Amino acid sequence: MRGSLAGNSERSFTLHWTARAGEHSYTAKLYRLVNGQKQWADLWSGKIRVRRPDQQFAVELEAFPRDLEGGGMVFFTVGAWNFAGDALNVQFHVVDESGRVVYPRDGGWISKYLPKGASNYTLDAFNWDIYGVDNHTYTVIARISGEEENDTATIIVKPVNGTGLKQVGFECDDLYLSTGLDRGHHLLYRGTLTCRAILYNPTPYYLRGSITDVHAVEITPKVLDSDLVGEWGYTPTISIAPNGYYTVLFYRNTTSIGVYHLEHDLYGLPFTVKLHYEFNSTNGLFSEKFIGIGSAWITQDSTQAAISSTIFIGGTAATIVGFFVSTPALTAMGALSFFVGLYQTAG
Image (cartoon, rainbow, N blue to C red; front, top):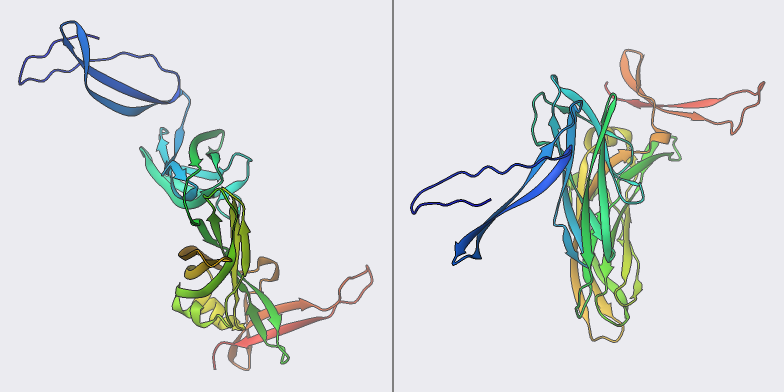
């Protein structure tokens, strides 16, 4: 399109384009004509979404950053548009190129309310450590009754030249607390807090050495920190190939946790671990200190969940907190014996 524009003035130009349903990117470029030659002046880029006539909603997966050197943390946002006449209940999850669900982290689907008329509405946001020199594609799959939509984001991990190790990821598993009994038949919970660091070797030679000086800078909530016992266990020695990756495991056990403490102070809470560690090369020529920060949730092993019910004994409230089948296997005529653990909550 050509046109003219007087000095100290404004003018609008309308560009026409026939698009198919879906999301499209565009760039408008502005040139000056000087003696018949084009000279670049400015540009503007954006996106436009064209919906199908019967489409009720749309989703978008935004990621930042999309270019990494060696690897690192990427922040994802799931956005949505509501074209229907009413609010919608949208189920969604995010998968990688293999089809594995990466969010939610325990698999399954997340259900969120999408208001009527919503435009670029944030359904959810999360972060994910991505490493491995390659293109990594993630897809959000969203559905309502009778309709499914999706959108993808590609993260490019490039090799990087360097002289030392690079931490490209740090994550923690959910802390699962499982049941057990002490000698007095009291119901207790125990678990292991586990985190892992992903290290990348950008050099053209092997890096061999040991992990030392492992200690927590901070663990929140504080109540969880007080429930951990002993020292951190970890992978003591490592060897990383040129342009290769290595996962260092860190773990620490909890003390025996009572059911009241679990239910009132811990269960369902998010936790964050800020961990310091150091790598020292075998030849003594190289040393690097790292801080890893990972977050997850405190939960209870669902396969051993205690029965939640209240009974009354002599006017005092007590809660049934355990139900254990003592017969390993039952035949059709076999007898069933059991133990019921009681935890007094009042009186």
